[in-house]
Amino acid sequence: MTDLAALTPKLGSLYPFASQYFDRGAGVRLHYIDEGAGPAVVMVHGNPTWSFYYRNLIVELRKTHRCIAPDHVGMGLSDKPPDSGYPYTLQARIDDLTALLATLQLAQPLTLVVHDWGGMIGMAWATQHPQLIGKLVILNTAAFPLPPSKPFPWQLRLTRTWLGALLVRGFNMFSWTATHAAMTRNSMPAAVRGGYTAPYDSWTNRIATLRFVQDIPLAAGQPGFDIVRATAAKLGLFAATPTYVGWGGQDFVFDDHFLAEWRRYFPHALVNYLADAGHYVLEDAASELVPAICAFVREG
Image 1 (cartoon, one colour):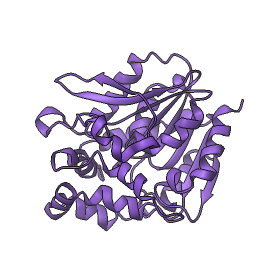
Image 2 (spheres, rainbow, N blue to C red; image 1 turned 120 degrees about the vertical axis):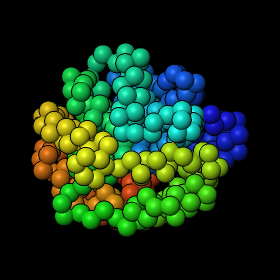
Image 3 (cartoon, rainbow, N blue to C red; image 1 turned 90 degrees about the vertical axis):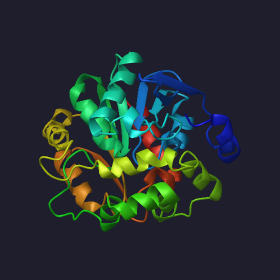
Image 4 (cartoon, helix red, strand yellow; image 1 turned 135 degrees about the vertical axis):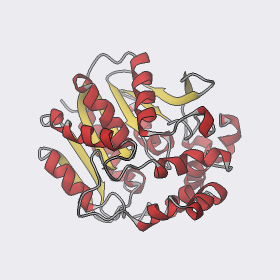
């Protein structure tokens, strides 16, 4: 497990939360944040981020809500087992989230916040527990197959090759590059960049940033594609669910092709389109998005 004390010099006051751990068996522990009290807000991150991505939102929302933000296994402060100790599949991620939230006994409708691959994980869980969903916050993500009009980005194709694997695990290229390319409105401060990359400080600790990309299902017959298709088929369960979409227009992966799909599935959603913001939209447009999301979560 990543040592929180070892990360302190890099995180400083940027991550002012108490760490919680959930045993997933076979010696694997999942790290999560559980801050504040009141109606629950569950925040599911993607790749190559971790709960650090939601830190500004947690600081504000914990004043009125219970904020829960897990780190996927292999990410953030969770354990980073080898392939022999964890499957690193979409189904495993959904199972982890299901088990954690069941243990926390969240009986009342909650707000689900999702970003990047966290959208697929979080929405798959949501379609299996629709009675627990009170509101949705969607941030540059997907919960459906790659839109027909959207080519699979060459950068991700490269990552799925042997050369990409070497760059990701040997040089931390996925996490490091994202801290530069995933923000377009603002430049990421060095301390924040250090917070994003700190958990991925060795070949061993970068396993999940690679496995996440390798596990993306693109066509029928590939592992996980049936989950993607089944989740998309059930998105209609949330046709009347209050939904806020915060969308960075400069995202080269989750771009306007994906936003068009969300608009098709959720025509009722309140969409805040930030034309000059990048993939890390909650980071890039924090001054605008954090108060807007807090207001949305608190209203009603």
